[in-house]
Image (cartoon, rainbow, N blue to C red; front, side, top):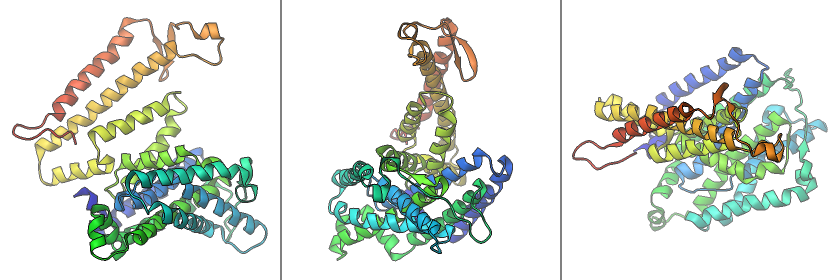
Length: 421
């Protein structure tokens, strides 16, 4: 089963995947320039991927859905900033170990929150985690000594062992080192007795109780581990930005890690890495192209959940299994779904851009001008005649054709029940 992919992954497979990923990320800065904004983007992707891996310990392995994981991410960020301030004051705290302070901060807050949240399960557990994050988000602006008030805290990265940490490439490789370490530790965790109990807790909590396990204590430990990893990611965020404020506790931060983890796939070890990296890159690219990028991000999540509920990583695993078993009909149906879904998305997005450009109010224009229908609009770098019939018919035809292909691809073979997954 896909959901047991983590403990079943062999050391040789993990080593091969990790070596390939490591080679790729080591070469990336040289391709785009060591101090370019792209390197900063890659750093953010690694941080988001680590945050998603920590979150997946809770949902993917433990079966506990948290709606407030920003609490431990933010706690790690502020703990790291306090450690950086101590380093500025002369305390011998090496910059590469600053994220460890973030992990300890996330762990401490996670133990407290987890002790109470894990007394309940299901939707009640999720609501408690959400309430705890909102509590921190609400009180942080009023606790200037801890969170710096509304303006937040700031600190400067100190040089260590001849490395100034003043350049983006230094922060990138520091983040990469911690990312590789966390990946190895989480893989080893999945093969420990506690990791096996974590999976058993997700599958059948009642059976664990009958076997004599203290389920509440076990759930609290799992919650704390997840919070600690999230705190390391928050600590790296603080090192990268050299600042943080109460916004880091906001609900959209918690929502982003949930979306990224589910898009990547909770049942595949590297699934959250794929999903979180995709969302960060998506936001970076499309936020400069359109005002509706958040809407499209929602479309992406809906499409993945409807057609590939196992996530991108799970889809890749199923395709690989189909190739290995030479299941050509299944593989063909899967292959047909991908371009069809892309066609639906592209056509729908283009039509939404047309609506937005034609009828959307522009704050830079007056109220009367904003209410007028424009004749031409610039969409994806192209000047489009919005009053032309072909401008609307072309994407509508693509949408209809893509939906027809998708319907064919989703149609189950004769004698089998229909299953869109």
